[in-house]
Length: 520
Image (cartoon, rainbow, N blue to C red; front, side, top):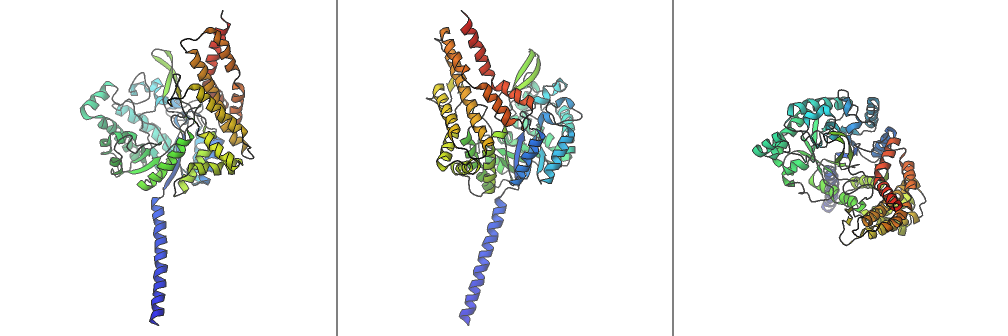
């Protein structure tokens, strides 16, 4: 009898232990999961049509994303500051409809209003001339003009809050390159330090957000650089530690941020430097997700927001005269988000799995499932995607030992490989890879021609040969394919503008060589 009782007790104890362990594991998983699973949309350039925007939100919702950070920039129709809105601005009805739609999908839409740096689109308008930190570089407000800035951003914040329902409000605050540039800012920085110059202004913005009933969200890079700026901020402040594939201490002592007591979210990227129209570093973005998302989970970050930058946020002025800037053009433009479904789905996978994503395996499975590629083709596809993602600057390749000609040959190999695979499904999505490879190949031919034109011993008699190389490129075909693949995504005017800027070097070289070739 005693043996039977002891056996029964042992069985109950074992069951209790298993159940407790399972419950602990579940609770532990929940503790280590992200409450905020988000995506950031950058509308500074490449403004998505509203149907495409809603279609993307639906896709996010179906894949577990509960937060969307909207960097509306000039696409938001401010009422008191109508001059800020650009030619692609949505109507207020469209914005409200989009927020309502996201609400029905249980997606929280957080407005992002840059309020320190990256405000060229505001400061280029001379109505705001007095707020500029520098009268030639319009990228940043002067933190010493606190009263003027507070009045402006009170208006902008209040307007955005009137159309958004989120309890969070993102004020930006990253990459304040001009800190201490103006005489008054320099005096404060020299007297009290850069941390106080930055921190006092950010404190004012965060307190403004809190006074409006919201929680302020701030990019963490400058706070990492000047940790004394953290001391006086409202306890409600949330920092986003953006990391695109580097050590945690890149911007400063990461441990100080961790010990600050503020809630922290993480942020990788699927489009960032050195990406542009002619280069996408696919492997870098996969490795960024592979490393940083598990790292953020282990650090106890409460959220993970994927960024997707259409531009670096640095602009080149188009000037009417030495003192009057007509417009600003983004100096780095990236292929539209429409071509990056592979990386978007990889983010979904990385968020939903407790194991680090395995890039090669993910790409192989994706290529098989989405495009019907064979196992060997899927492997070749991944190898082609990550082949030689090097830049060309002033005629030199960023990878030592590589020539422009070798880089051009690698691009031609990739283009031919993408064209050779037997794609049985998802042809329209797959066509973006072919197009991107074609754009890169055409660009590298131009760079090779330009390099030869710059050669010290260049002979005008060679102009005809170089001209022939350019004329053999399928630029018109590429432009038509770009329009076909992105007509649902971008406005017609945008497609035309993207083509003009993407082909600027080609058209310039063409005209110059035609002139040289036809001149006796």
